Image (tube, rainbow, N blue to C red):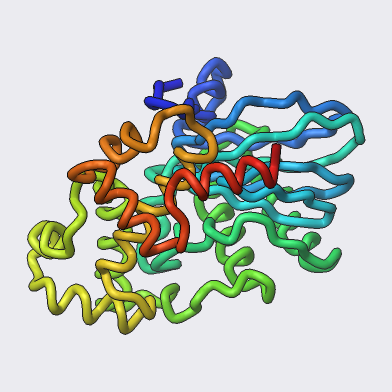
Length: 293
């Protein structure tokens, strides 16, 4: 675990290293359980795919409460804050955790923006769709359980196939044009990666244009043509999302959150937040906590 100022961040794949046959940056497990403890809010360093095969679970993802009934797919990206609610009912699932670097080489040219797939969160599926996903997951489980030559390469390619199968679920609504490997989409992918890492302190389009060796105008035009939003809108949305997470899950004051997100002062943060949400930070915090607590 590495400590976040407010919200713990866990590297799930680190726990698997205790196993002599563990694969760096990857773990998979099949879970049959009748009890889920009420875990505290946390994030993962990597990506998570959970195939809920039977039963029902209740989980907070960011600041929304999901009661998820099988069959369903749950997709989590690294920054998303989540918490399992305590329950007694039996359920069965297959969970896969992997670091971004685990798929980096294999994903190039196969699925341009596979990380985009992970922002849908909970997706109800039909039995036939779950069977298709489990065909891939079952092969991954089998391969993971046997130490044989080329095990890692086979698992990487099967995981890529599973992600692509998730992307084409009718309920997913991923913008398929973003999944095609083009120069424009590669620029979108690079911008998303850089802004995910730096949105807290690099808040202007020019910051990213400099890092990407393009003009701010060209970057804005490219992002808007593919995503439908300007680069500045994407940056601002990421700052707002992180502010909402901190307001809901954390215990810092509005002033302290403004400092965390590199606003000049809390007054500017208040104006920025209200402009984008219609609420002041304090109003949002009060309403969202009243909704779920």
